[in-house]
Length: 196
Image (cartoon, rainbow, N blue to C red):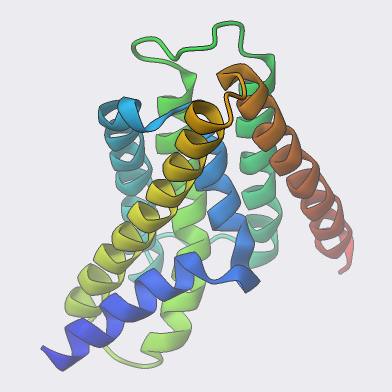
């Protein structure tokens, strides 16, 4: 049980860590178009992301899939700025039924899962039984995501409902800021990727 708690704690602390802001930015970009009353849609969105990153986290930790960590570190900010850009060019203010964000959450979750796996592998070392740590770490990531989503939705609620900023303006502000940060991160990591 101590091992489970330890990996659970490492999972949620990893995703909310400001030093690894890329995962926070991705989740914030996914949620930028939503308000608190859209919580059911956000739940589906976060579940799609979880399914995506759970698959590649498991495959990568068990060494079924191996992709260069430099490539993954470059692709993560690319997923963020594509998601943010999609929010910026979105025509309707209120999200409708199934939309491209669900695809982004699931597909881009696959990439983020490989990013999470590098950290988890470093924690596991030579440990052979990875089932409990993998499950606990993944549940910790999910808990961390819920914390981030809750924070973004509460902030959106305050800004849109209390200060009367238009929903579209909030989305444009948040998504544009995330787009700019992610673009700079991708450019930086592209340079590192090109270094042999």
